[in-house]
Image 1 (spheres, rainbow, N blue to C red):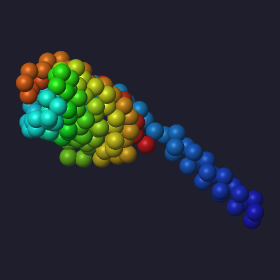
Image 2 (cartoon, one colour):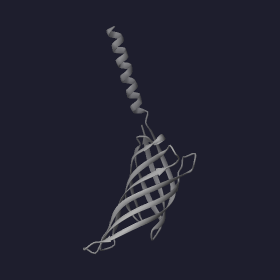
Image 3 (cartoon, helix red, strand yellow):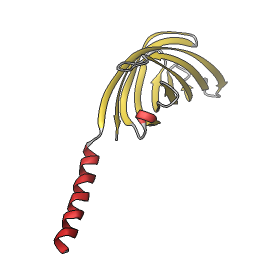
Image 4 (cartoon, rainbow, N blue to C red):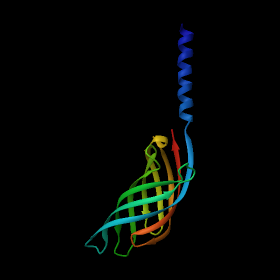
Length: 153
């Protein structure tokens, strides 16, 4: 009986180890376009605080659908010298079941770094990192290229 109990415990422990190693990492790439709504509050220092909201449409590869939509909300700061930085949270939706969320630190007209912070469907429990590079930026509209390395459990 003791040997059987040990065997069952060892089998369960090994199954748990395999599950931990079963994660999958996929690099997703694409291009997108956005339209932003910005509210600007002037600051006494000569800079400004910025609240933004973006609507996004982007391609996504590899993917059966080939595209996704997204929404972002963020806060930023424009210094008196014109330096501009934004921290944003975004949700990207490929279909009714599959979506993922990111936390981004961006400089408009340049790009920035991304952390994948979860999702649903095939991206349930997703983690990862990525980059966004601006391709064109004019006023409150622009295009970008991205590369996200997403790991799912």
